[in-house]
Length: 375
Image (cartoon, rainbow, N blue to C red; front, side, top):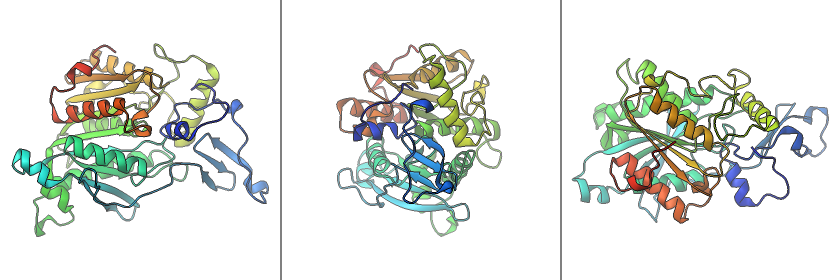
């Protein structure tokens, strides 16, 4: 989390949008933007650069991640999307992505598709399942991996602090799996028709980038503790954590030791959870009880210039040394910043990473040469 100074290009701002990879220490931050006719009630309570400012009045002003696009059929990929209400009372929704059935039927005789539950990034404070960034990414991923994807629109801070996002993520996961397990047709009740007809509940994958990677990890841990439905065994085939957000008080190998930067990380974490979880809580720093991780396979991706990359490598090392019996893979992209694949989706490196994620979901070997096995 090196100090951020000078001008920030729009590309860097978008990059920073996904979990604060370049967040500055508080002392290096510019003052919060004044409101027109601001009085004492508009004094700044917390400036979470570059995402938002929270005023003491409770007003929140976001600087990015608020744009949305409607569900549609993507002309480039043929993937259809539509929005669903998961829990009206809680305001929980999701966007579903269904690949072209003609393409699916041509290769596997109309077999059901893997079910991917995806959690977006945004530092727990911005972005949504309906943003242009994630709409574009999920269209591409659903097409390339041929999965039925559920992109969860969980509640964000500071209006709804953690554990609201975790609660929403768990509710959406259980809903998606219950729908996929329901028989299609009129008897399906509240089950979603796309999920009941086309999703394979035996091929369930969880994924997320940045803060969403943290959420996906915590859902897999909870599934290991509680089971997913009716106390039954968890059925997670794979867990893909893309540049995930994890932190802790003590540095891991190759992680920054700058005290100001580390304090700022702790402050922003405390902000999103209102102090409920310490920076060493298992939700922020994965625990030692790895055997509870309810997934047969795990893929971690990291970017070489990302300040969070050291934690991703440490995650893989700890998982492999824990006695957990699954398969852990690390994929590293040198010379790139945090979640670069969202900011530069048409780049050669982003295409290669997309291939790795799709290959992981489909259990193939096409990208095995690109996977690092040393963490």
